[in-house]
Length: 118
Image 1: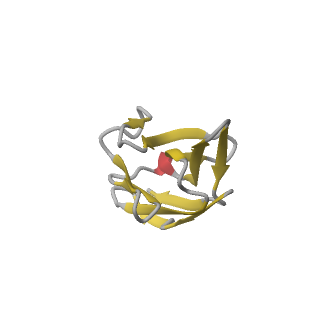
Image 2: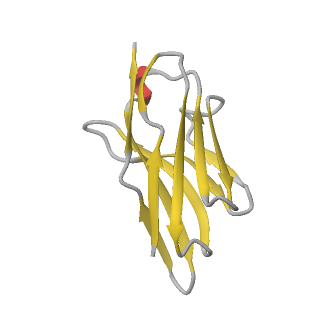
Protein backbone atom coordinates (compact mmCIF):
# COMPACT_ATOMS: atom_id res chain seq x y z
CA UNK A 1 0.00 0.00 0.00
CA UNK A 2 1.10 3.52 -0.80
CA UNK A 3 -0.36 6.67 0.67
CA UNK A 4 -0.02 10.01 -1.13
CA UNK A 5 -0.58 13.42 0.41
CA UNK A 6 -0.60 16.54 -1.75
CA UNK A 7 0.00 20.08 -0.57
CA UNK A 8 0.73 23.51 -1.98
CA UNK A 9 -2.50 24.37 -3.77
CA UNK A 10 -4.24 27.69 -3.39
CA UNK A 11 -5.41 30.85 -5.07
CA UNK A 12 -3.04 32.76 -7.31
CA UNK A 13 -3.36 35.50 -9.91
CA UNK A 14 -2.71 34.81 -13.56
CA UNK A 15 1.00 34.91 -14.28
CA UNK A 16 1.85 33.74 -10.79
CA UNK A 17 3.49 30.56 -9.54
CA UNK A 18 2.71 27.68 -7.21
CA UNK A 19 4.64 24.62 -6.15
CA UNK A 20 2.77 21.42 -5.41
CA UNK A 21 4.25 18.64 -3.31
CA UNK A 22 3.27 14.99 -3.08
CA UNK A 23 4.63 13.02 -0.16
CA UNK A 24 4.51 9.23 -0.43
CA UNK A 25 4.50 6.80 2.48
CA UNK A 26 4.02 3.09 2.96
CA UNK A 27 5.47 0.62 0.47
CA UNK A 28 7.28 3.22 -1.59
CA UNK A 29 10.23 1.06 -2.62
CA UNK A 30 8.49 -0.15 -5.76
CA UNK A 31 7.14 3.18 -7.02
CA UNK A 32 8.14 3.41 -10.66
CA UNK A 33 6.36 6.48 -11.97
CA UNK A 34 4.92 9.50 -10.18
CA UNK A 35 2.63 11.88 -11.95
CA UNK A 36 0.33 14.84 -11.58
CA UNK A 37 -3.15 14.82 -13.06
CA UNK A 38 -5.78 17.52 -12.93
CA UNK A 39 -9.53 17.70 -13.24
CA UNK A 40 -11.36 20.91 -13.98
CA UNK A 41 -15.11 21.25 -13.30
CA UNK A 42 -17.10 19.40 -15.92
CA UNK A 43 -14.02 17.93 -17.55
CA UNK A 44 -12.24 14.60 -17.49
CA UNK A 45 -9.12 14.04 -15.45
CA UNK A 46 -6.03 14.63 -17.58
CA UNK A 47 -2.34 13.93 -17.25
CA UNK A 48 -0.28 17.04 -16.54
CA UNK A 49 3.20 15.60 -16.11
CA UNK A 50 4.95 12.39 -15.13
CA UNK A 51 8.41 11.35 -14.04
CA UNK A 52 9.94 7.90 -13.86
CA UNK A 53 12.25 6.57 -11.16
CA UNK A 54 15.15 7.32 -13.47
CA UNK A 55 14.07 10.89 -14.05
CA UNK A 56 12.47 10.69 -17.50
CA UNK A 57 9.70 13.26 -17.78
CA UNK A 58 6.62 13.75 -19.89
CA UNK A 59 4.35 16.81 -20.11
CA UNK A 60 0.99 17.70 -21.53
CA UNK A 61 1.35 20.12 -24.43
CA UNK A 62 -0.68 22.72 -22.55
CA UNK A 63 1.90 23.01 -19.76
CA UNK A 64 5.19 22.53 -21.60
CA UNK A 65 7.59 25.33 -20.85
CA UNK A 66 5.58 26.46 -17.83
CA UNK A 67 5.45 23.48 -15.47
CA UNK A 68 8.31 21.36 -14.19
CA UNK A 69 7.96 18.00 -12.46
CA UNK A 70 10.70 16.73 -10.21
CA UNK A 71 11.19 13.93 -7.75
CA UNK A 72 13.31 13.39 -4.66
CA UNK A 73 13.50 9.63 -4.20
CA UNK A 74 15.26 9.96 -0.85
CA UNK A 75 12.44 12.13 0.50
CA UNK A 76 9.80 10.04 -1.32
CA UNK A 77 8.33 13.27 -2.65
CA UNK A 78 7.35 14.57 -6.07
CA UNK A 79 6.95 18.21 -6.93
CA UNK A 80 5.20 20.24 -9.59
CA UNK A 81 6.53 23.74 -10.10
CA UNK A 82 3.90 25.75 -11.93
CA UNK A 83 4.89 29.09 -13.45
CA UNK A 84 3.05 31.56 -15.69
CA UNK A 85 -0.24 30.20 -14.46
CA UNK A 86 -3.36 30.78 -16.52
CA UNK A 87 -7.04 30.73 -15.52
CA UNK A 88 -7.42 27.54 -17.56
CA UNK A 89 -5.00 25.83 -15.16
CA UNK A 90 -7.69 26.02 -12.49
CA UNK A 91 -8.46 22.47 -11.36
CA UNK A 92 -8.07 19.92 -8.64
CA UNK A 93 -4.58 18.48 -8.96
CA UNK A 94 -4.04 14.84 -8.04
CA UNK A 95 -0.82 13.01 -7.36
CA UNK A 96 -0.48 9.53 -8.83
CA UNK A 97 2.03 6.79 -8.14
CA UNK A 98 2.44 3.61 -10.15
CA UNK A 99 3.85 0.60 -8.34
CA UNK A 100 5.23 -2.33 -10.29
CA UNK A 101 5.77 -5.58 -8.43
CA UNK A 102 4.16 -8.67 -9.93
CA UNK A 103 1.33 -6.53 -11.26
CA UNK A 104 0.97 -2.82 -11.85
CA UNK A 105 -1.13 -0.80 -9.42
CA UNK A 106 -1.90 2.90 -9.30
CA UNK A 107 -2.43 4.97 -6.17
CA UNK A 108 -4.01 8.42 -5.89
CA UNK A 109 -3.85 11.30 -3.45
CA UNK A 110 -6.87 13.19 -2.24
CA UNK A 111 -6.23 16.20 -4.49
CA UNK A 112 -5.34 19.82 -3.93
CA UNK A 113 -7.23 22.77 -5.36
CA UNK A 114 -5.52 25.28 -7.61
CA UNK A 115 -7.45 28.40 -8.59
CA UNK A 116 -5.99 30.96 -10.98
CA UNK A 117 -7.79 34.29 -11.13
CA UNK A 118 -7.69 36.53 -14.18
